[in-house]
Length: 212
Image 1 (cartoon, rainbow, N blue to C red):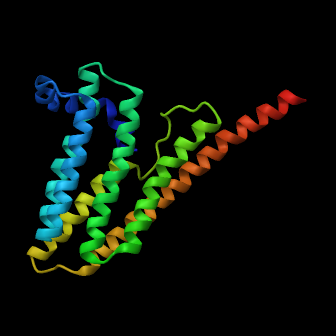
Image 2 (cartoon, helix red, strand yellow):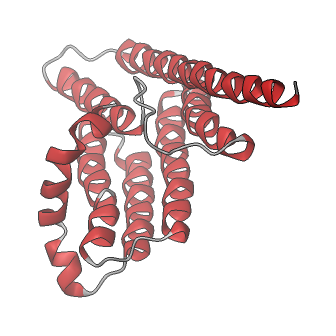
Image 3 (cartoon, helix red, strand yellow):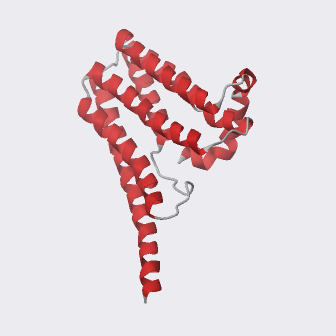
């Protein structure tokens, strides 16, 4: 939702930040794959250092780099359907990697898997409509999309780490936070399903009217 509403203001910032990558000659797909590698690297490092604060801060950097693939595509006029598909698939693997790392360290597998399911279903609810009818990729301003999920998980990890530093750390911070993440992700999936049903009902009504 935030990304869609503020894209006119955010995109120019990403495009300026992408200047070094453009000058290096990196392609959008290369940026996407390097972003995945960075997410995997900082998640693997978390399994060793077990610091939520460090994990959250390094994820901010890794996700910021990953977000530059679209800016590179626009700057180099290399937007493609293959690139869009690759980016969407890599996004799901990134979420799975991060949530699995959190679950592994904190034994939060049920909440992590529900959180991941909510993210996947949010994406699938829109993608599946396109198999039934012609549907725009725009106009789906739902509450807890990927951009919001990234902000939430990074903020949650940083908050938990800071709380630990000042003596207020508690295993419940991550448990409750991840449960809220899972709830919001699945509510958003249901929100998209409701919008999808509305679009499909309109098409069904048009088909019935045409047969009369």
